Image 1 (cartoon, rainbow, N blue to C red):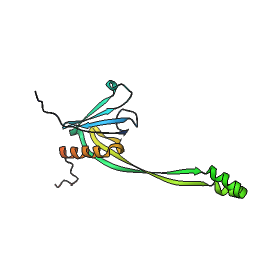
Image 2 (cartoon, helix red, strand yellow):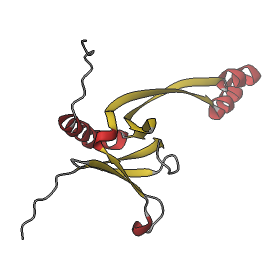
Image 3 (cartoon, one colour):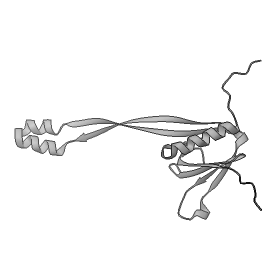
Image 4 (cartoon, one colour):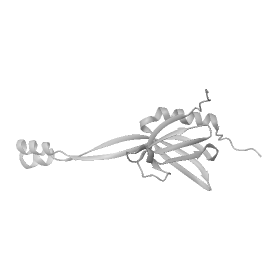
Length: 154
């Protein structure tokens, strides 16, 4: 009557690569003791959302990395050009409308899952929107399957 409930940990992110779904597809992923289930949220019909399972024993490691992007935003000030022209003529327009560059820095948190399925493969997911849930998932995975970085002594 009261069956044993299987504990799972769930998180969400955007697919970068590694699954047969379009890039930037929203994914939910749940970690169970035996496998991890990925569900791609494609379309509006929940019954048609594709689901992928990956056995825990095939996963070599699961880690979160930070990826920092720096973009240069270039803007030209049209109002500055008009005010400069009104105040100081052509030279004022040139100075007021000069191109200004700003750097915009964005930091993304990526979940990288390395696994073996006939060959080494990798799944990359942007988990910036649910970093805490993903960190709990990775910690739970490390309890299920500890990863040792120590070299093997022969």
